[in-house]
Amino acid sequence: MALPLISPDRTPAGSSLSPVLPGRAVVVAPYGSGRHYQSEFADRGWDCVAVTPADDALPPLYRGSLDPTGYRRVVVHDGNVDETARALRALRVRAVVAGTEIGVPLAEQLAYRLGLPGNDPQTSHRRRDKGAMAAALTSAGIDAPRSLSTDRLRDALSWAHSLDTPDLVLKPADSAGSDGVIFCSSPDEIRAAWIQLHGVPNAMGGSNDHLVIQERLQGSQYVVNSVSAPDADGTPRHTITEFWADHRTGTTHVYDRLDLLNRAKLIPRTLAHYTVRVLDALGIAAGPAHTELIYVPRRGPVLIESGARPEGSYDPAAMREAVGSDHIRDAVHAVVTGAPKSLASDRPRSSVTKVSLIAPHDGALDEDLLRTLLTLPTVQGYVGTLVPGTPVHRTVDLLTSPGRLTLTAENPRAIDEDYNTIRAVEAAGLYDGRTP
Image (cartoon, rainbow, N blue to C red; front, side, top):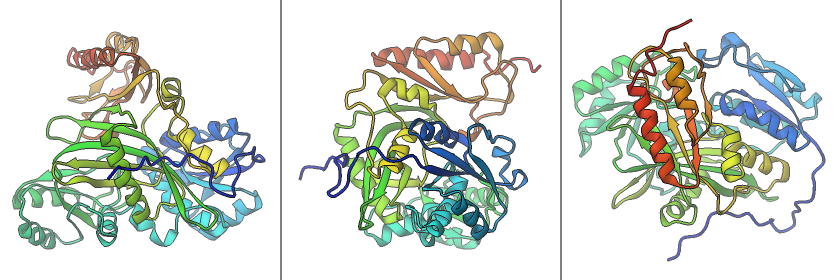
């Protein structure tokens, strides 16, 4: 049976893509890549309101990083959803989006109270809790990792003993960026990982009261980005906008490189077919989603996790230069027109790779080697504070990477050459610089 091309870019019956009157959008927690929403909405003639918790209520990762430039107003959410919704209703907002993972539940609650398109807040746990994600897929008859969400070590050990594999992973239920992900293959390793994680704050500001233990999936890893919008009858329409081959280092979960894939190839089409079913099972009806999968040999695609927000840690300008669009631009198009669509060229002129920097130890960025890195011919953009003397920490996950570079070239061999140079520059002492 031929696999469908999951890209409903056609105009739905009864709708129109004629110009839409300017509006006002709410960006909840406009951090990370979510900070680019404001400028993209402005390009479409809309203005934006930022909604954020007070700075001291934010996870340390985001404190002090809000840039209020360009926002019509910044609304500080004090925990009272009705009060925040009342302030936004007075501003006559027409859309609500989550800028980053910590904004997902609040964005869904606000959209619901304002009568705007969004995902059902009663099912938010499916889109934040990794154990609930797996359970939702299993209930829908979709392959998912065997999982247990628990607050008791003895239950985790008993469940692990019942499996037919020793290869497991323990992780926070609601964090991101591989924060706290620990591979285990024995009861002693499970105990040690539990002691390290249980009850401590995670990077997204939650507390690891419940942990998720899952079978460790073995196979090739992929990232699938999408945008969704509801039809007039509420039926969600999904468009897959990007497919990436996701390479990690050796047997760890440290990010190495992401390579953009041709949408027409068999593997992306297979991933699209599975991902659309996942989006429906998780209740993602509106907005962007960032989904991580593993293709397990003789089994097929299996979900790792999905976030109802745009991809984090990338440079939109470099993506737009290379292929014509990016996840934020596609998400804004879906909001403004009501039609989910990939705006990227079907035949991009460039190959694209995103390379995560990997610091083997604490240190600081060396000025000369950093200059060598940033002037490589395929490097078109980056995220991170890549300034000489900037302190860095040993990389253990995406959140501790010093930065991520976007490499583009007509010939993918040029990207591979510069990728090898990046790793050689790191080995030569990129992180042995002097702090100011």
